[in-house]
Length: 535
Picture 1 (cartoon, rainbow, N blue to C red):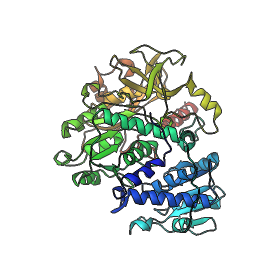
Picture 2 (cartoon, rainbow, N blue to C red):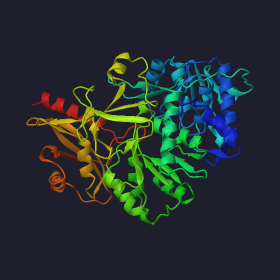
Picture 3 (spheres, rainbow, N blue to C red):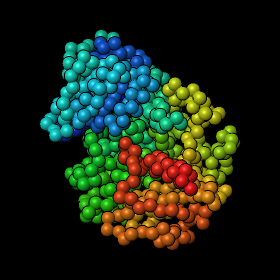
Picture 4 (cartoon, rainbow, N blue to C red):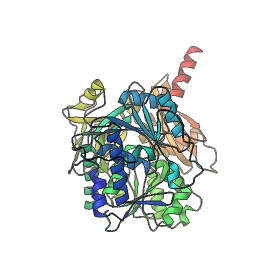
């Protein structure tokens, strides 16, 4: 796969299509030529501020043009971008700043983001805070105040008059991004991604689109609800779209009704996560909406329930093309080819330039045969070299040059891979390996289930058993455990059958909107401790 310095994406775009729209946000359009000039100005300002090769610059930015401008500008200056989530708690932000060593923090005055960043600086977690003025994109109710303080500088002052006479040479092997993901200690750890890792992922996506006839000759309008601080939104959406000369319509948050309106107005590509597609299909009158402009509907970030994809296809005639990847793979991994409905439920086949295999859970040096279940291991130019300042976790994540993903799955006779669960989520029930994701897929076939999560809970007889947490569709009748088990009979084995059920108005989510089991596991652990203390 072709690799290159990531800033070349905007440099080439500015040369090829200077007047073509690159970004749109709140009605304002920025052309490829303008984006290139803004990135150059940002790079000059970072350079003038003393930021150079290998220095870390933290971005605390939602989906506004401030993100790509600061992102490409920092990379052009030779810096390493540190992605922070606007939804992180202050303690997590402080951890990421300290762990990465970033002393400059770029944010914007959307809601209370800038004020929070100023407090981090006042507490000693950053030396300087640069605030991109949100009012540059027009009046808006969520534009927040501009904080004051010795460490705070507004973006317009930061870039004014900055010039670089000697551009910093940036190579594909240079570190580009610290992308934080979960850690074994409970605190996030950062996957180290080079310019080569990120560009290899973009090249894999581009080759895939070309091979399967998904590339269109005219520029596409891509609705970008996925957060740019998340690797899926960054590489698979923003970078790939800009490389192709498309228009990225940046949106701060997902709203299913607004998404349908924008599709009817001409947006034709919508990348999402399963919870987005569930919300769209639950919209009143969804079946009557005109989605004829859509040319590509993609899902990633979490397993796509087969039943949700089937309902979407039945109502629209469109295929939800799911795939698999992770922060450590930039996040290229696999995709489901168009025209393979019989492979629904699989994660598809590896993207070009990527190799995937299944290895033994007991010995990752042993490759398993077709149909045997084990841990997925991946290799490719897109794969991280390891975790920032985590030598032990890095060593444990590789075997013979293959990255161990932590996902359990198998490969079928056609080369399609299926993930049955995360290694850490597997339930050991009565001596059997039970995979919550397989139970969730079966539960989604119930017509009244909107969302579902399954975890393992203590069981005095079996050791562990499955407990299902459900959100029911609006207007659904109450659902009992016995009724659910009756529905699942024939779909699950006895050892897989849920032994407990809890109906909730809402299920917990991660900051980027994916359904999350962490809170449920904590609640059940606390419940078990309380029960043990009061027998």
